[in-house]
Amino acid sequence: MASQNLLLLPGDGIGPEIMVEVKKVIAWFNEKGGMSFETDDGLVGGSAYDAHGQSISEEDMAKAMAADAVIFGAVGGPKWDDVPYEVRPEAGLLRLRKDMELFANLRPAICYPALADASSLKKDIIEGLDILIVRELTGGVYFGEPKEITDLGNGQKRGVDTQVYDTYEIERISKVAFELARTRNNKVCSMEKRNVMKSGVLWNEVVTQTHKAGFEDVTLEHMLADAGGMQLVRWPKQFDVIVTDNLFGDMLSDVAAMLTGSLGMLPSASLGAPDAKTGKRKALYEPVHGSAPDIAGTGAANPIAMIASFGMALRYSFEEVAAADMLDKAIANALDKGLRTKDIAAAGEATVSTTEMGDAIVAELDALSA
Ligand code: IPM
Ligand code: MG
Image (cartoon, rainbow, N blue to C red):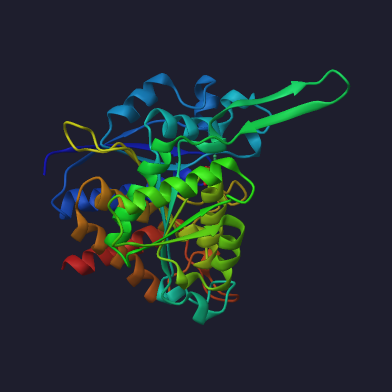
């Protein structure tokens, strides 16, 4: 395999600790998996702000644009609560998404059999759960203008965010959802709030048209996003692929993540459109969880979401499906053997550290390839 460039952006909080573990996995695939990844490191979020007063430097932005894939940890923390809004840690992540045009965010929620008891829901409701949230990532209220606080001059201020979607944005994200559904259980549920939002009316219309224009073999259902949230905790196994906008996707994916027992388990992929010439997509892979500043530096962080995010890179950026399956299996095997970081341990159960979990997954890769 020709050499592939990965830009590693560990970020803040537990980001650097979990990145150390994914580096072991990347090294394993280079040494024993016949792959050839070259890695470069950069700064993002609060750590970038501390170094050069920006949430990501132009130099690191350029590296991200040129990389075959970006592997991203997490950003943010109370240390940067008072920095100006434009350079807050999250701005670095949002700039990466926007400038790399990563409009499709894939957030799988899979319940590992070994963890069926770790969910706050009853075992039969989440056992065997495998759903995929496809979240629109470069539009909607996250980026719509105007976005401002204005002084009304009478002692009052007004905060405005703008929810805006154009046809092409809804069409391209629904195509991604339909195409992915075909590789799974062939069902898409689209969620919006057409009962109160014009953008929701258009969302519903365009998803329906896109379905008619070439995806009628896929079962399509529409649900109001609030009802969708309720159904996710009532009977999540009714879903296969959920397609939704940026803000609803942010909220619903946290809910879906928690169904599986821990936010520390779930990876995500953010993909751009395939390049017209090369067919390659720009891509960024990150855990769904945040920087967890409360446990940073304690060795308690769960590296699985980060490692599984690299697994998604193998799958979606490098077409190394067998390697991705093997890495998922290595994670499942480590869990089957009873290894638990604190976030997924039952009361009184013994726990392992971030490093121990990373090493155990690497050992499972060794075992699987022996
Ligand atoms: C996520 C996060 C981000 C978001 C934050 C860190 C800006 O919550 O990726 O889900 O809101 O998109
Ligand atoms: Mg979120």
